[in-house]
Length: 599
Image (cartoon, rainbow, N blue to C red):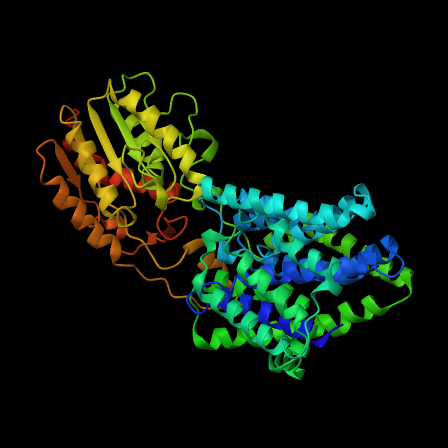
């Protein structure tokens, strides 16, 4: 292995580590993954094609990829599963198991491209998120041999450039014309691999003499370093990422000069040597730290721990697993090791939920959710969406985001008590009204928001009262505020009641309870932004005669939140659970009755 290639690998993995630690420190550090793709394309092309004999070394290629990737990868998945059983709540463990299935089948790029749930952990808390790039690599390792098999050898000098140009053109066109994200797409990432493939295929024609090489090497390195600060994530894949990719190709052919010497120094070569294991381990360590602390930004000591344990685990993985099994000539040992860990991982996954319950007794379901998601019209339509007395005429509609959805049991209890009904229509991260700033919503929430908005338009026609609830501190942007004003002004013939936002906290209380039981103390405290948002919404309501603001923040229910009378009333850091929703209905009963003017 060329020493400068190890140095480039070190540059790639360190940039990814810095970016993952904090995006502001190296805005385009994610390009380290693209650098890995170029290097992979270059190296596997040499493995596949024997220049002197003009023969494909299929057997050597397949065995080398298995030895290189599988052993350390399987051990990582096994270790992450044990950590997930210990730290994750029952609900979060279910999400983890789904991601594990995709990681095992090297399909996690597809899984994470479609990933999204309001109740799932944040992306920066998902320990297997980084496996998307390994999935793309493995898929490419299957695709490239197929291309070589189907292409006559004598035509490869035309076929390979044609494939690169075609897919690069398609990638650029797709990124520029589509609003969807293709970050995890194999097809649009192939041009990055092909930069390395083409370089390997035409390598002899690209050699630079010793006089030019120092200057081209310096230029290439400066382009790569500048790219780390100049390219945004929404430009990848596409034309922008080709600049650092071609710069890496230029570095690979610039084998003389100070830059090559720098990349070949002992420290970078050592880091490059453990770069695969370092990439495997750094992200899960960081993700679990963020899951435990429930914070993206971490204290300095935790960052130091992140670096220390990433390098320690990477070194151990490389020394004890990756290197011995990569160098072994005993195939039986290799397959025995892989088989043993796959079987252990399978059994561990099957027993994970039971094991988690042994470590930590889960709360009854009514404490961990605000309603049965399959029975409410949240982001979808289920039956008639009616809560309360279903036989009574429905003159009131309840709309909003998940803070309105958490009121389903509230209105069911209230409606049954007073012989009235409510139509409850909500959507995640979205106020389902015209003009809402949909761009700030998660991709997975946008389509359901549009559909609920259209459905609500029709439902409003025969309603006399509108109840509006939301996570108001999330909806203070000018576009959304204007949409709310327009909605109010377009419905002057109806009574509108705006519910205040309930108190919110710095931590998910269910998670904090589990982590505290493990001996890691987390302090739950209120976040004041919800108070400012309530004041803003109250001022807005006071501008209109047909609008009432129902201020609930001074209820006894919230005096010792997230607990009331010794019972947990929150399901996370800003939603009530089923228990809390019922208490909420009891304490607001008379106040809401007066505003509704129902006797």
